[in-house]
Image 1: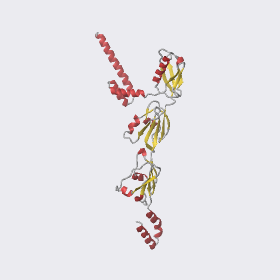
Image 2: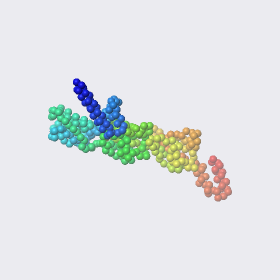
Image 3: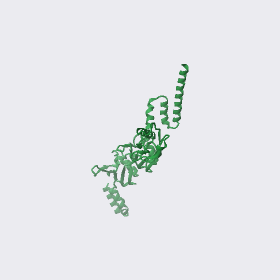
Image 4: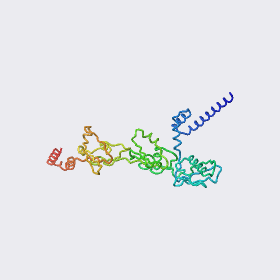
Length: 335
């Protein structure tokens, strides 16, 4: 009796030792973050089970147009290399069509084996399925990325992988990244770039074959008038600009600018325009609040009419005392 009990305990210990070796070997092939989950499974921690279950569920799945190798053990006449039809089925020799779209190769093998049993073709078939040619394992990355296009990403990947494959975002990338998933095209997933955990979101957001990733273009504001470099300026990563920040991007105002008569030209919902006056001098002195700009706002900085007139006429008038006195009177009268 003692020998039997000892043998049972020894076998149990050997099985646990063998399982621990398998888990340790697997841990060498996975990422550091997943090694913790494996270690928790080895020690019996129940909270690690959903992690491994999720990992299995997101395996590489069969898509329309893929070429699959169906092998029925010891039955070559039922084995074949088959293309997945538009309806998601493969046409098996003798057995007819069987749905395989969206399944992992293991799930497809089980489905085909059941089909062979249900059709009474085989009593206990053993079927393996492998993907021989990936026709639909591409993710489309479009919008404000350096190299827009379709990228072959086999298996589940993250948003970070998809953006990296496209060379990363451009300097005009906006504040939103939209993802259309093939499995649920009516539901648009939006990732906000200004999220405090954006870096983590990139790695936690899954993209799979057939998904479309679109990086929005940043909104722009325009600074026109008496500034050093008038033009269009992007709200990088969706960050709003203030009036002073926009003026700074335009390299500041000129000496002839009428600071107290600046204005924001803003579109209204009815298609019209609204003019918001801004006293840049007071804003710069913190006597007036710096306004936040909306996308497509136009900041207008007019040129001072009196200064412009003096600059144009004074050089011609200073040749004579009369002219100088006249110019002085004009200057004093326009202050």
